[in-house]
Length: 227
Picture 1 (cartoon, one colour):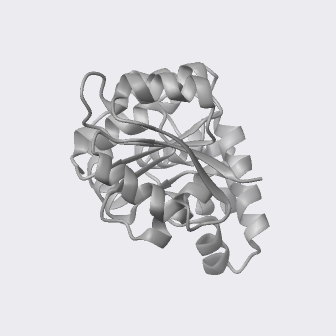
Picture 2 (picture 1 turned 90 degrees about the horizontal axis):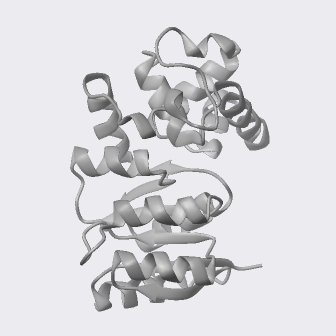
């Protein structure tokens, strides 16, 4: 079954380019487009896509607010923030809103298709440049309460203290590698384990810490000094 994608960007040529690039992947189907945040929310409710590629700066409702609304109605939908901007404010806001990925529009075509497949499979990713920015800033800047793992309404340990103490040594190492921006395949290669084992460690760490996804694992790793 193809991965269904909704494109949300205020520039027609940008949407056309993304649509063309994504459709070269036979397992990806672009099912709709939106030019504003409001349109993106309405289209997502109607089409129920697996993944939304969401621009940030759009007329009316911006992409961050649209992300919050889409995930409120469709919690299983995955959203990749795709923008030309890479400021700290956008990174933190996107993570707090629940985005599964944050990529700049400089990403190459293969990388874009891979990103869609990664988040559709339930994973989460940040581009290396964004991960470096997060690494450099999280220790000095609190995440908004809605985005803090400890503030997750679904559960999780309270902020402060060594939340990572519930993890095994191997799980802590895997979380550390996740926080450096490595994929499960890269983690497996570095630790000389199978990709399935790497994914299992990540899944167990997410469950033990009561966080939403691997992006939130990154936040915990920074806040608890693992990085």
